[in-house]
Image 1: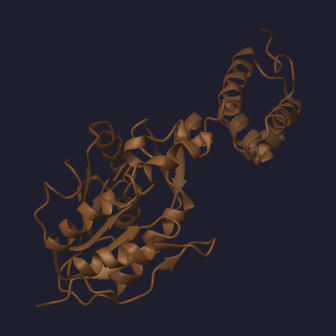
Image 2 (image 1 turned 90 degrees about the horizontal axis):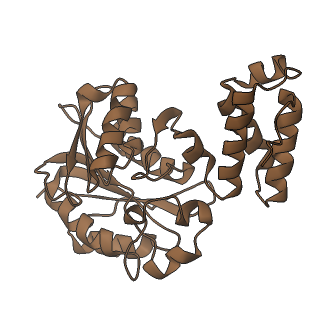
Length: 293
């Protein structure tokens, strides 16, 4: 099969790719085309503009055709590139990790609000349960220079990815990663526990977009029959491992915040603020504190 990008200039190839992606029904065809051609050619936006009339080399045309084929098949741009920006930081991905999403930055925002309110004589101790790529934990360590954190995950491959991200971001000295189910291997006490657990009801997974359904790890998506299996395990574990005055912050799916708060109260945690909404207005980050005895 001939390569449609062979012999084209950078600009004409970009336009041709955008047209292909639009024809495939992709919503952000222009943006995806620019990102994919930048990756295939190793050029930033300035380079694309400056070299717009230059013909693609055979190797560049081949890489671009591969990128186009994968995107049209429904693979997310972040998976094709192997990286995703979160909290302004670059994170490498693997098959064992979710693609970090802007909604999850709401968890970081709320966690930082809570940490900055605390009155403590020691650096904060943070645990990230189900850390995946390490995005939440490493964003927090980036913002709180004296904090130390530990991330847990069932997947050894995810933990390798998280460790590599910590090293790349210069945070390895303040981050540890442990393989276990939720917080089972942690002893505490922690000043902050954060988590973006699996919360999609099992029956809903086949209805998700192909980008999520076919490319995100189901282990990180499937929340059981009603979507709350992870919270039922995680919240009591967190309550036992929080320091007095420490806080738990978790991500919630649409319509789940109230039931999560009920589980938090049942675990003897105190609700001291409403859930924090994401940019779409959905209550996304839910928190509670362990009150001193």
